[in-house]
Length: 437
Ligand code: AMP
Ligand code: ZN
Image (cartoon, rainbow, N blue to C red):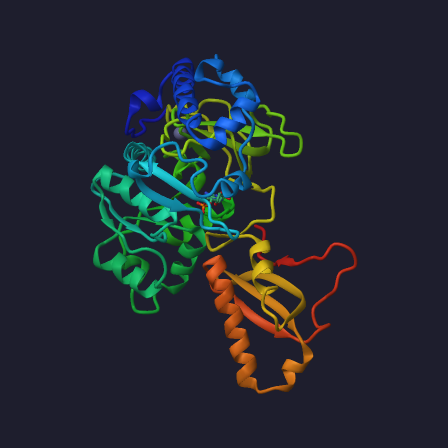
């Protein structure tokens, strides 16, 4: 065992039996909240759960049906809201939206509890109130920005709410305020590294010592690369807006995968095809249940993220079990520089544009360290006979249409019919050329 830092040592090192006792008690409370929502009232009564007392043990959670992203969309806007609107303090949404957004409601105590989980996560990495924290995640509806912001303030760090993008300014700010900790996607941090030195600011001018990296999948090799290039410690941070956002699972000083905060979430791993609950060590889809969210409780949410649970135990002394870094997805969701994008969103938009013919392709690769999304579309041949300015206007229109839907701006290429590969059988619409390390 090492001498690890804690935010709330009593909870973080509680005996398994104590954690389970808390989980059961909070699960019942969550069921009481959930039963106030039209969605769960229907879903739970269908399986014979009419009151929290119908759940007697944690094992009984298995009687509760899974909740999916589609359920969230179909119950938009208020089907999963368990409080009156005036009690909702904040609304966030998922970074990837297919048509109807996935919105998340927080009551005052929900923000409070979430903030506390983030403070716990931050302190667990060894960061303290003497650190200067530059939050490079996007603010706004996305949970990555405000979530960590509140947590860092609670710890008492000096917070710089700079948000995403503008690399020159990021680097200058890191120098000006001698930033010691950043919160960033791994791809963007690699990009920042590649720009060091361009404006005369080098690594030696910076005081950086830690990075919280998350919002997109990355390998152990990428972490090591970041650590070596920048001489820092990088900690994996996992979360999803449906379950609050960041602060679901975070690495501790040991950097051996992420502790799930089991007093706030019940984590299960299931076989994505059969729905069967798997054992520790077996890889499958992560399913999460909120234990402390009153405004919008979610039970057994299918995250689509692939991982496995470690048996209890870590050199830091925490008893909350760890999950492995995310090993993939069970659906076709792409994560482009931290932003979730579904191919169906792209198809839906481009097919509404009359000039677009039937074939298209989504191409993802890397430009430097950043992901690059290119949408190649075939347009009707007569359009190629017109003026170049008109073609350019059409290209621009497609970019704008897509940006309105997927939030990021893709490159758009216009092709003549027949130029893109036609596949026999199932169309291969997505070509992901990003290196798998
Ligand atoms: P959002 O709802 O916009 O916060 O996106 C959540 C999704 O981002 C998750 O379901 C994961 O697929 C992905 N994600 C977040 N953090 C990580 C991480 N540390 N490693 C891999 N994927 C992540
Ligand atoms: Zn640990």
